[in-house]
Image (cartoon, rainbow, N blue to C red):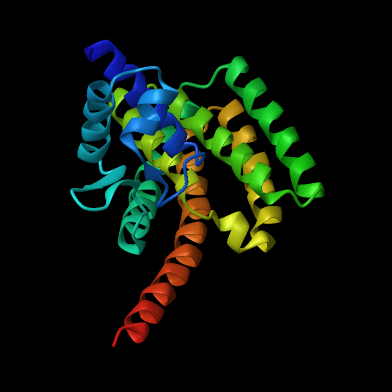
Length: 221
């Protein structure tokens, strides 16, 4: 029973973080039980775990739904990434290998192709993959865990490239420079560039979210 609950939990979590299950999607226990060829009990256990991680909301009257990220939560995630990704970038450069550089080059080329097609959804995915490679290369267990979770959560909301496609060219230029700095193991310079890179995104998105909050406040009676 516990194994079945874990299987359901991991699958639903993946589908939420990947954006497959959108915010406010209802999670009906008997429907999920049928989908997973399970009884209701493992589904309930899985939903309780997801609720404990703040990925879903459970209500006695309304049932379970995929939670919508609040503006404050999105701002908080941006602030943490702005602070911690420069550290991951420095460590990645110091730990640089030819294999890492090759992987970054492949993702960069894919990103260029997506940008040329104005495919900002796939560009966002490639951008996330690029940053995830840097995070993994930091080789810091706790840093990887936290930043990987934040990168996954990004799929639950609009990215900067959806909202401000004009930043794509600068993003590509800086990714090109990051590959050079990583290849040359220049940790200090890499951290400085990543801070500049994330600060630009943070400032634009923070302004956007702040305006959303103002609009929400104005709409309230």
